[in-house]
Image (tube, one colour):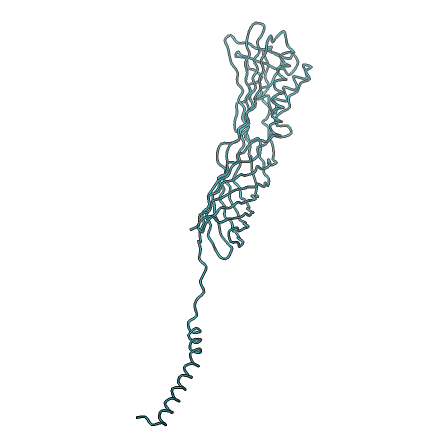
Length: 374
């Protein structure tokens, strides 16, 4: 049996211990929290993106350049043994056009042919067209992404409306001039047929390899972004060509036939170039792993264009053939379907360096892309 004093003492000790434990519990809890802090959760998400894009690229202006014309042909004596003429490769340009206009004037004909190279050769420009490609991007930090891409531009070299108007003028002048020549010699040419045509072919494209830095803004689903970078454009495909073909067929009173054809061709090619790229766009999430975006890019750089000239005079020969001499003054014109040499008998050439142009150009590219994240 416990003594009353011991019972009181035991209860006092129990009370002190309970109070101490109650006081120490918050301190222990705080110490435990301080000793073992929980690390904050790091945001996670895809680091890579691959996008497939398609869009439209605007055209560029024609670079200014230097035009060169082949030298004149040799002089020779016509079938009458007295009158001289010159061998020309084409009536559409250079010495051939000058010679033709001289004879027209001597015969009192008011028609003239505007030479195709006056004041310089009609140049080619990059036309508008479709562009498509693939790009891959890597997240760097914050809103910064690095992106590399390969795009194929189906924006060929071609000819604008101003060039086509000039060519049409020369084409029509050819018909007018030779019809007037035939009409001026009714005793020599009984009937005539004259035709002239111009054909344009836009060809080629570009492969553009680019590297840009993107800075993307924040947003729950819509994020605007800006970009800047550099690229290299390499052309591919056939040259852009302008081909002019003129034909005259004269019938003499003795039913002899003169049939001569004048063919000339201008071919244009562009060289590779470095491009500076600026732009921006808007991206919208479709899911955590996919999105689409709309983008505008400005491509700024240099453009070099070279033009080569070719001429292919030809005629139909017959046996027995005929020869027609126009103009008794000096010089004159000679047309022939026999072994006699006609005036349209200059060098058959191709690859003459007729034009070299260079300049700065700007091109806008508007595109839409499907983006896959991983």
